[in-house]
Amino acid sequence: MTLRELEEGDQAALDRAIAEFAAVDPAWSFAFGYAPGADYASFLARSRLVRGGVDVPSGRVQNTLLAAFEGDRIVGRGTVRHRVTPELLERGGHLGFGVVPLARRRGVATAILRGCVAHARARGIPRALVTCVETNLGSRRTIERAGGVLDDIRPHADARVCRYWI
Ligand SMILES: CC(C)(COP(=O)(O)OP(=O)(O)OC[C@H]1O[C@@H](n2cnc3c(N)ncnc32)[C@H](O)[C@@H]1OP(=O)(O)O)[C@@H](O)C(=O)NCCC(=O)NCCS
Image 1 (cartoon, rainbow, N blue to C red):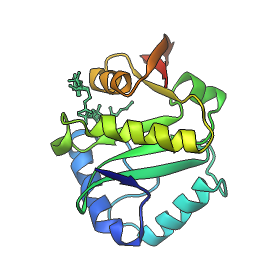
Image 2 (image 1 turned 90 degrees about the vertical axis):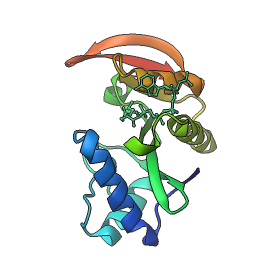
Image 3 (image 1 turned 135 degrees about the vertical axis):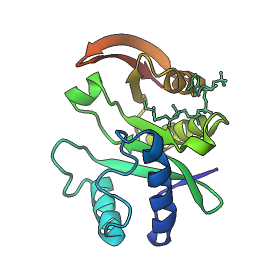
């Protein structure tokens, strides 16, 4: 598995991964601000600006999107937020990750999260916050396997949120 930023030739792989993911998790955003068939060049340009902290949309923070490739297929993605707001300290944290259904249960999420941690460290983030809802056992186990230490579990909106530091 290779974790890297998206490039110009990756639209077909991204469209396929989004469709695969949406078939089972329609509420989960695989690539913020992009839907299959949309203007990929504009999306890439916006993503690069956001990574550089320029024109960051309201409600979001500077971040880097990393796609997980196996060959020419995207099997998951990670997100590294470069800082956390008070809201993200409650829920959201620095790091996010997801894996397409057909690639689950073989260590991909763990590898993505470890790669995101390395990316965060390289950006000068000594401790990264990772959160998930209490009932998301796959996510919790992934975070723990990647070295996450549970800080606390807090009620948030309609869920109880586990907050881990790595
Ligand atoms: C949660 C998710 C990322 C797990 O991805 P994955 O690639 O299957 O995870 P891994 O193969 O690296 O598994 C890591 C650990 O979690 C366990 N695990 C994975 N899915 C699980 C599930 N549904 N229930 C219980 N344990 C699970 C694995 O068995 C493994 O633990 P082990 O080594 O002790 O056996 C994936 O199911 C997903 O993308 N879900 C939807 C999006 C999401 O919830 N993202 C996280 C938001 S915080």
